[in-house]
Amino acid sequence: MWRYICGRVLFAVVTIYVAVTFNFILFRVLPGDAVHSLARVPNASPSLVAQLTREFGLDKSPWEQYVSYLRELLRGNMGVSFVDKRPVWDNLMEMLGNSVMLALVGTILGILLGILTGVAAAWWRGTFLGSSTTATAIFFYSVPAQWLALVLLMWFAGVLPTHGMIDPYLMDTSFLGRAIDIAKHMLLPAVTMAVILYGGYTLVVRSAMLESLGEDYVLTARAKGLSPRRILRTYALRNAMLPTVTLIGLSLSSIVGGSTLLETVFSWPGIGYATYQAVLQRDYPTLQGSFLILTVVVVFVNLLTDLLYFRLDPRIRR
Image (cartoon, rainbow, N blue to C red; front, side, top):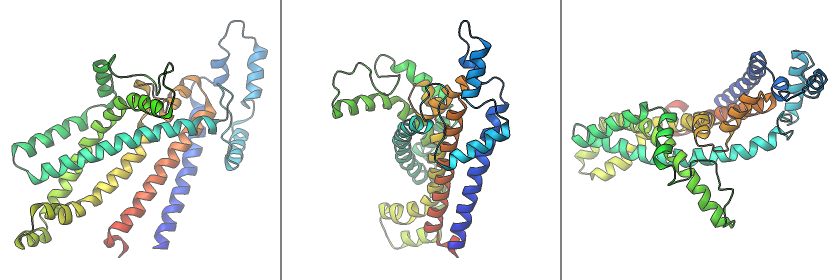
């Protein structure tokens, strides 16, 4: 068991290092740079461009920049943003919290809806209810997230908040008032995320449930005269949750990193929206910091999923 865990942890560390190196190289081979982007002001002199180049450390060779970046990263320093001159860590931690909050709400809604519809589609397979549930899940599974977000934004504009995270002119600044306002702003992006996710959860749960319902132990339970509710809860659903746990882990890691489209459409101040803005402004420290955080989140969640699967399925331990 410990050999398996140590191997997975070592693989995760190597993956993070490779991702850090790749991100450092990627952002410096793109056309344009932060200095010329920030110096696009009237009467920008060559001396101003040279001063900004020295200030951002872009006058050094790529190797010197890489070694300096790794050294500072090991100290917990992700650098300073080229835009607002604030530490990247402070900016991204606040935005990461917003992204995690949105991802958790949307994912929990998608999981609950997906499990319910998946179980119903498997139990009533061959009926109109089962077929329509499966067809609806396939439809929403194939719908692009940004398209659905734009449709909901046009439908509910003027009814629900469609921009930002909180109303800047909010009158009730108490904790409860702010919480209600944040919930209103979160409703549309969270529902969009849940609807997109529920289709995949439904299909996976349905497939796993059909496989479990065909096993001998389910047939034995039916022969014993157990109630359908107990067969579903104790025998079929419990064993069908193994592939569902894997999908939940993969989706959680990808949602935090792949929510850029939703956060951009709804201007939700999360790490995905910050990454989008940093790309436009050639803010290398913010880009490297955001990609590093996203990489760590993805690798950590995948590692946690592997260990949880190792715990849930005794066949892996043997």
